[in-house]
Length: 318
Length: 263
Image 1 (cartoon, rainbow over the protein chains, first blue to last red):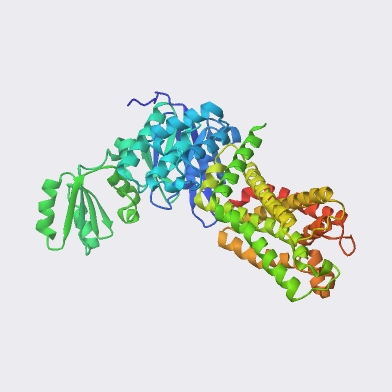
Image 2 (tube, rainbow over the protein chains, first blue to last red; image 1 turned 180 degrees about the horizontal axis):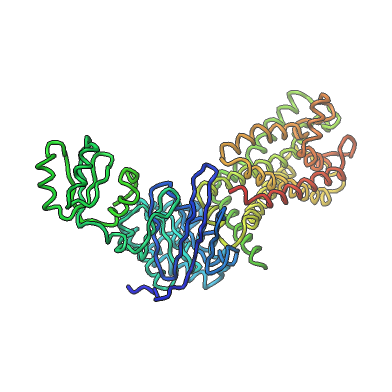
């Protein structure tokens, strides 16, 4: 599908040198971000990195302590909020309402009325493959169907800026595919889409631009291919619990190894070619390596290099 | 109608629908006052034979009826506020607040629903009190004026309780905390409002607490309008209305103003 990304992208949202601290101390520091119309931007980072805070700055739920946030060139206001759609990290449905009623309520809050609201609601439910459940109460929906309803709610008023906090977290492949299909369609129509995620493979497949956040700061950004450009061809995940600093130093001296990172149960290597490196590894350290996983390098490895493998443990990097 | 009013109307409709569908809420708000009327009223009337001049002919059930109308409003308000916490915990409130309308508009819509639900439920208890044999409401100034006063009192009481709920939501972040406050503070205040026993014959310290208690003025006005056969011994409609009106408008306005801090 073609994306409406022009040579001179029109900015849908811009954060300039924004800092925000939560009472507990976490937050973001000196974050700058531009989101163009028609672009899907994924904010990648471990839990607590500051992704949701960036999303809240963009949605206007919080104001920066320093710096500024502009949406369509204007600071947040009720009129600006009219052009923003928000999908929260957790499903935000009322069990006692039907799907139709949920969309009717949110449509009315955004000034939609009558036949236009009914038609738009029905079309969205159909597009997200939940049209047959329109008159069912939300309490009967699975987690995946609730996420689709959340997305329908956020898309109902055709926002120019769509913000989603981990929209496909723990969903089945069908639900994830339905959600990404709707997002790509909306981006093709010119909306700017910002997605918080821990899922590097989804980001690699769907994002026009990836922003890696860690410790409240933007660590890297670019297209998935830009972020992976400096990686070697293959990634090796070694189960090697007793790997020492001396072992790591020795491996770093090998020409075919680009990087050596410590993980929870061993080492993560980025190498020129697994076929050449693995025999040599086993020749030297075979007795101490209890397992190995080999795959092509991907955005996941770029993430590892920026965030660190240990930092990523427990995250849904897939 | 402006966008904000339409938004408030949409929220009002949603909350009303939720209450109708949540039958346990609907029934329990009504059942407790009716149970107290039937059991406590009959038991005290026949078992303790109260002699206070404020309890006409020792008929405690009838004396209890106006207090039960106020209690229904209190129960209903508690449930509506619990709904606010449920919406906050489910994330729905955050989704609503992402709309172009500010927190005061969202909270206004929800508060309107709470006020309407509380008022209708309290008036159902009033109607039941009128039709149940054995409950004698005096309507000293005629039933029309009395009923209008009861409706106005119940409305003011619900507005005040809605404002209080908003203020509590600012300070108390969990539903458990909210229920704790309701149990520890509001129910004792209700017991000391004159709903269960006249305040003119209790020890001075209890009487002082009673007159500091805002609920006392609502219960007094309800007694004045529907139960008492003379204004003797009552605080009176002027002071009652003034205290209740000021508190209702004040609490509601402050509650709406501080609503954004509740999230």
